[in-house]
Length: 455
Image (cartoon, rainbow, N blue to C red; front, side, top):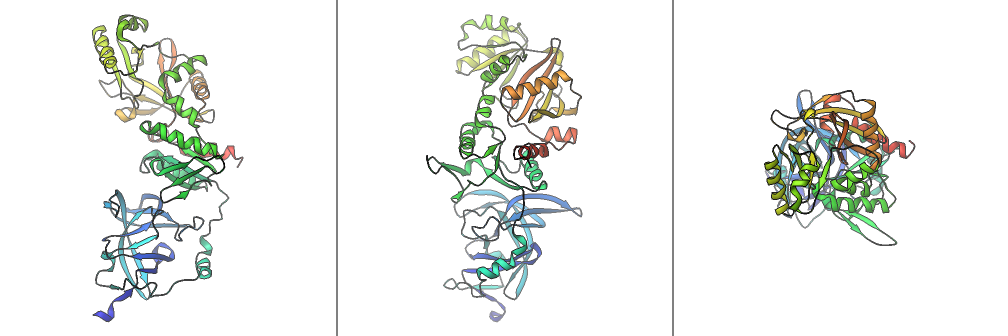
């Protein structure tokens, strides 16, 4: 029985024929239960009515030019705890491992191993009954020379004329982020998902840098697409500003994002550009609550938290007494609020115009659920295609320009006084608008970057 087992050192070179990986260096670790492979741009898909997953791998450590595009049957998605105690959801695939003259099927998880010393970790589940490990030895089955490595991967060298684009965001599983990555790849660009929390900066007059998990330096990007969630605006904008300092093209600047997140300031900018909004009041003290209510036309009225997003922190006060209670309650918590007239004739509907590079590329009507006045898709609102008027398009384009945003979701409400602007969003979601209109909005974002580089 002993002679049938493969004897391995603590490090070995192996291959994955079904994935098109001719050789890759693996850490042989009997202390780890599960095997893991380095993977980027991971995306599940359906193939012949079965679940598959596609992903990219840089099989050679410290070589980002060599990329293999892989796909494999998807076995599972499970929570894996790393040696450092970090838990993450990982896709699990099944494929054939070839090591020496032996070959057998194994399961392994896909994860970003940029911060690790090896692109591949061979765990004990994959070795059970087939392998003996001599931890004092290395490369018992041989190792390739730099010349043979180059020959093996000669067809994998990335000879793309495309751009190197980073998507600066928090959640790679979000529909919008997946679509942007996909759209960039389909147009021949090298796409990288950059998790905001895993980036850090070196502030230096001569050699400013941005680093990523594992110490990787991110100074070689052509363009960055910031998709910053409100809860991390400060740090996300600091990173965006650092990329700008490195002369990297950003699709929305840090300044534009920051001012769009300040609801009061953004409304002041819009009004200065001659854009009509619902009558709005802002006060620091609750002493003149009665006059504040009168200022916006009385009840019913809307009370908005300045820090609210996706319809959260927005309250409809249907009577004067209710309005006084809500305003005074927020003020007692030292919360900054806007008081705004309620446009009853809108009947729980608003229009979302998606503006890219000074053009409305898509528009939908969002309608609130029964009994709800907020039309946000995140709150159960529905989306449908709508033909916007020339005036509404003009307002949307003017609003994006006033905020200095190359990409913006502009929300407009139809009133008896004509169209009124509600809000401008610097990281608008794509799912509702792409699903309703069947338009490639993500592709239009990539085209805006290409236009800047005159591609």
